[in-house]
Every structure is written in C-alpha cells, then in structure tokens.
Amino acid sequence: DVKVTQSSRYLVKRTGEKVFLECVQDMDHENMFWYRQDPGLGLRLIYFSYDVKMKEKGDIPEGYSVSREKKERFSLILESASTNQTSMYLCASSPRPRGGETQYFGPGTRLLVL
Amino acid sequence: GEDVEQSLFLSVREGDSSVINCTYTDSSSTYLYWYKQEPGAGLQLLTYIFSNMDMKQDQRLTVLLNKKDKHLSLRIADTQTGDSAIYFCAERSDYKLSFGAGTTVTVRA
Image (tube, rainbow over all chains, first blue to last red; front, side, top):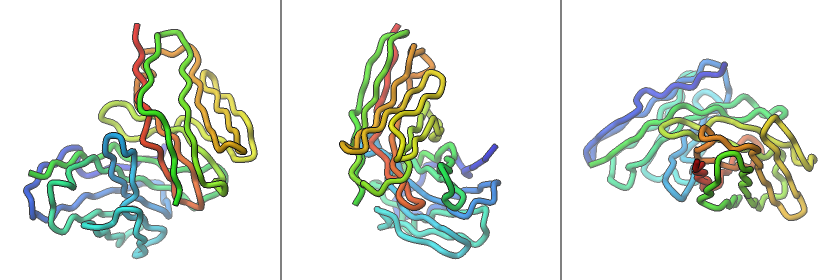
C-alpha cells in the first residue's frame, strides 16, 4: 500500500513565524504535490515537483516555497506565516503518468495561524 | 485554465441512491476521478474512468461520463451512513489534477 505521511496533524503558529510542513512517501514516486483545502474552494495546488530538486508553481504559490532534496521528501515552507494561510494542507504523490495512476494523499495538516 | 464544478451539498435517505454531478472544461482530460474524504482524513481514491469510456461500474458505484457535455456523475447505490463524506471529482491533464470544490453528502436515517 502506498503510504504518504505528513509530519503533523495539527499545528498552531503565530503571524510572522517560519513554518515547515514535511511530507514523506514510501513508494518511490517521481511526483509530489502540495495543496491547500478550504471550504467551498476544494483543493488548490500550491507547488509540485516532478523530480528531485525540481519544482514548479501551482495555482497559488504566493507566500510559499518548497524543497525537494530527496525523492521521498517534499517540504512546504511558509516564510512568514499570515492569518490567511490558516488552512488544511494536503500532500500527495504519484508515479509518472501511465494508465489511470493517480495521486495518493496524506492525512493532512491543519494549520492555524494566530 | 481548468475549471471543475460540482454542487456543494447533497442529503439522501439511507438505502436510497445518491447521484453526485460534476462538470469540467478541459476537453483534453485523459482520466477523470472520484475521491472521498471522511472527516479529519486525506482524500481516498474511489474510482476513475478513462475519457473514451461512457460508463464504469464497481460494486455500488457507477460512473457515467458524457464527454460531449463534459459531464461526470457518480451514483452510489444503497447509500449507507458510512458513505457520509465529501466527494471530489477531478480531471487529469498530464500529471496535474484539477479538483472541484467537493460535494458534502449527508446520509439521514
């Protein structure tokens, strides 16, 4: 079974703090993704990576950066957390597209910025 | 860009069928997916359909695809309380997915 783990289920941070969200997958997948989920908006892609040290901006990259130093790990960084970044953050991974292969999701990190 | 739309809420009586509808805009989508999210959990893949198919059935789940109208639906037969969740449809273009806002399904006794 594919396993995607995220470092924290719940996180409370203060405005201006630097925040690291970690994601690890154990299936040797090439692609990894960070989304944020907000009620009524569904999932919005922040960044994705299709290989080690490679990254591409998604639909809402502002205020975020990412790091992929190893294939199994993809980190999301909030350089200076703001209250509008309070959200549920979901990490996903997928192999290179072949057939119906899709993305496998972690359990999510619920971040509250005060 | 891609745009996927679905209604936000559905209430259904236990034992009845649920039908969740979705429309998408990207005609180059190769696969379309349905995901389920239970409270406090990540997304779990339920089923998917290749874009050249009209229908796919998997136990209690039936997916219908109308490619001409870019309309996707998920039917859950004999809906149970454990089916209460948020259901997301998603379209795939290359290796990126575009998600709808999610339909919250509430099953009442």
